[in-house]
Image 1 (cartoon, rainbow, N blue to C red):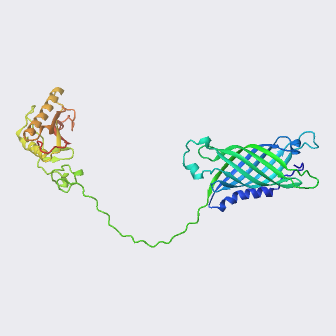
Image 2 (image 1 turned 90 degrees about the horizontal axis):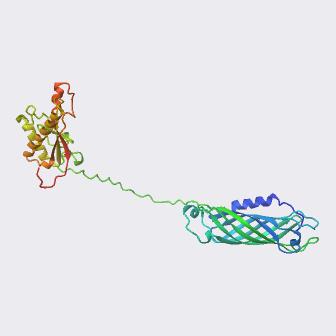
Image 3 (image 1 turned 180 degrees about the vertical axis):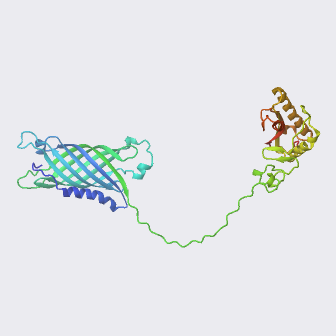
Length: 389
């Protein structure tokens, strides 16, 4: 190896970078990788082994392949060896060598594979062995010579993304000297041992889409199917889901319920058009209220899905215990009357509330009169066929 050394021109480095960027796009799809290989350099034979000590080397490579076994490589290698004591010069000996070659390796995953699936356990931590060979143009100052290099190594993926690979390598580097007056023309053999770092991606260039001419397709206009009819068991034109009396026909103006003279059927209660009259301070029903209660019984017989809670209420006059007992007894008396008209007792329940639920103020006579009342609260139940009404 000559002592005269010179840094290579920027033309070589620019050509290298341009090739790394342009070459992958010559194919439809390519793996584009960049690899840096720092290491220790050791001369293997005389006279270089006597003149140089252990030094260093570094290679940067661009690799292009289609994802298979073979990759083209374009690289630039620097070699630096310190001179040993006892020679005319002990300055650093350097060489620069652009290279072109091939690498054979286990196929790498594509970018889509790396990013699109988790990785299960892999033997040997996912190791990817490789071997490469390069033809080199070695520049050492006054001498520009041909050389070659061959290497073996293994790369290990880092992380799930497989974006980086690291691993050891061994490279044999030989400069072919050739005869030249005034120079030592024996070949220079160098061994480089190091640890490489590699990263890359998969570049895909989609083909230009070909627009196909298609014959016009006639589209037949089809009227949408009408919605299915809503159930209406009693056939009164009021659907069951909004019919307060789904088993008895009635006008929509009355929520689908029959129209009675003294009773208004509402979704949540039977409302009397007149008050139930009782004898003074007793639960005895006055005969004048029989027709209204008869219509309550008729409404329950017509609407078999009704169950009612008969609620007795009192004004605030008198003691609470007396009012409670009186409201209980009056509600029970109404229940007994309706049951005697043929309505099943399991559809009836009664309860007294004393004066706890006034609908008007107890400060006036008219308010107290209004608060003394019986109400029929409707609950919906399912009545089995053939059961009592």
